[in-house]
Length: 360
Ligand code: MRU
Image (cartoon, rainbow, N blue to C red; front, side):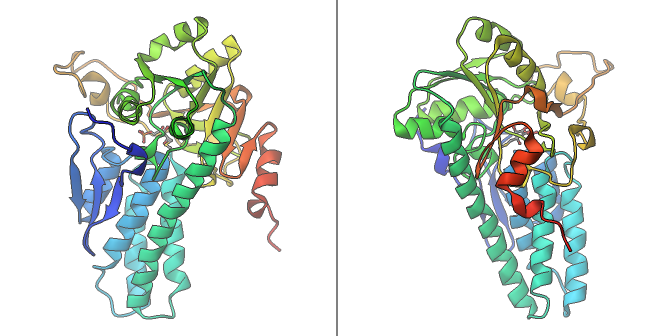
């Protein structure tokens, strides 16, 4: 396969004024298929079916989706327009519960419409279009900064273990949990990445090892149950992962299996870093106990990505999509404004005071 600068692939973009185009992440790495989405149902399904996935990416996608759907709302006055937009926002927001970015970007788009309510509907639609692009551009900037801070924690020659996919496909560019690896490549810092395959949906195998391989970054794919061995063998000097929702006490929800990696890292004395933009910190959520964990279909465990089902159809399965890594297991949370350390609430308040200011 030819090397390609995957950090600059546009995974979400506008088509015409009624469509959003995405790379179908479920088809990678075997095929690069672009989907042109026009209806609310197609857009909801794209998020639910993980055709577009990764916390920042689904937030960006929802903003693009609302922007194009707004072009087709039939209304002559703002109130009718806004009621319909709010309905569409609630519909998309219901597609996946754990990543807070989705809810925050839907809310941001609705607030944008409200901020322009005294203007013409054409002006409101234009503002929504510009806001969606701003959300994407801000994410590009945040990912770059996170990657810089993340890379400052690594050394030339390090082995780094990662879980799931938090690279360019899951964001807008570079990525979060895997952003430092792409930046290292640009700067000539040599790293070796161990990618957990990430059962059951194999984001690590299908997406992360694909992105790294195409970028020419040395990587080794391992099954999830091999992480302990590579740590014991001294091949891993740090763990870096993304996140879907971070609570104020530093508890961090990420792909199922992440907390197991953190527990192993603690046992072997390896630093464990969570990387994510402030759009993934839920400043209204006190602890990980308040985070809703998405539960997905048993068929994803029994048959998806297998040539033949590997369990009887009647076998019961439990398929939580995320788990919460306790803050006590996390060495640092890397954001676009710097690296937060325990106690996390105080550390977040220092870097993001605007979310802690008392409203009078
Ligand atoms: O179910 P997914 O594939 O959307 O889960 C994604 C993850 O858990 C990622 O690690 C997280 O969203 C961070 S993406 C920068």
